[in-house]
Image (cartoon, rainbow, N blue to C red; front, side):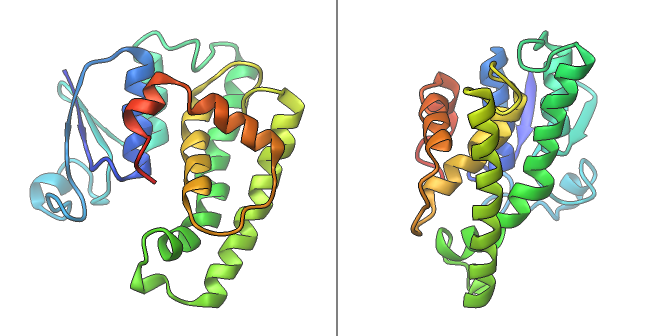
Length: 206
């Protein structure tokens, strides 16, 4: 059985839990990270030298980096509906997966830690404002894309990209600040939050 190491409050851990549920995979999850088992322990660093969650263990195979884990699970377990085989369709999914990790997440991280987690290390008001402005900018990019597709990030079908982006959108709505009206994002979130796997693994956790 698959084993997933990482606490459920981690957005990157929830990506993997959600993907497993979409693919109908059985797994065991162990809480590692702040408030739980220490990821700086030698035993954990032997699995991931970066001391970060999640880590996936599939028999003797160990993998880290959440978006890489998503791709692996889809490739290994017949997830072509989530990660298509066609080169162009797959590239579109990859594009939005990478955008979520490299652009969108970097934009919201400071504001989220300050406003949702009340982190004392993220108390600079000017930095919060800069983070919010960047977050708004990238959410408008997503809104424009969803206007184009009328459905999901990579096109008209739900994909791995929507697991990653859907969780970021969830944080957008769960973080307390005045949100600009983004109608396409609003509709997208309503579609995402109706999925059983999202309800199981994401509701109630910002």
